[in-house]
Length: 295
Image 1 (cartoon, rainbow, N blue to C red):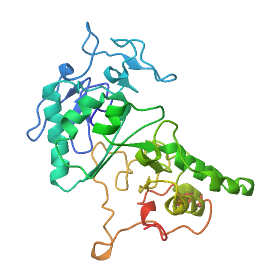
Image 2: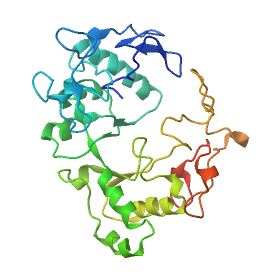
Image 3: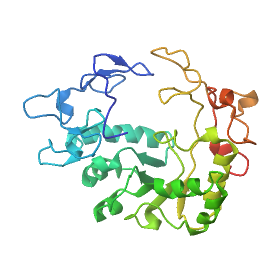
Image 4: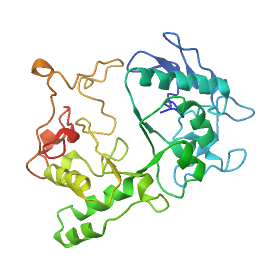
């Protein structure tokens, strides 16, 4: 997430690692500077307010110039001034730290709400192996494809999931799945069944059915690139990872590699659909990408 920050209304909200943020400010820590409302897009006469991305239409009539959503707050999350050189340096420092510890691939959250030239100005300073942008639909501009990277194709996975939902009348539809989002060339698309935003619709809670869907996505030759999701168990969309069940302001997530001799502690490959409610809501590491036949 290099375009926006959490929408904490007061100051301070406390992040899991102890960072302080809120009210379009960040406290700064361990060599990172204080961030103020000047670092975020804002209204001309009020630095604490900004144009919104409208929830129902995803349009931005209050922006200046009109409908330039790269200047507005999505879901109330303060939007960085990614076109400014000083902000680009700060965002590059963040990505540089990731690259230095071995990260070689990126998923850019809400990429369509950033100008591609701004994103490329700080992102392309490292030789990433692969970059995929969160994308909901539409035809991307040529410079975005050239300078930034591939596009998340949720429609491709949704078509596979719909054909494997237990209704045998839809099974033949699998043989006609050849693409997803209109406007994105197949060679630039990355198909996926679910992610942290869509996990309620298609998820591990379906058990064996979900596993069949991800195995089909891996085996079907039409998709140029696909991505498997690996996450943790949850009962609500606000739940954090294992180790953060008690609602503490600061918590320490349990390592997925906490088994004997550092083995991964993941849910076993499901054998039935759907999962029993108790198991489906249990706060454990699921690791769908490690299930038998997918790993």
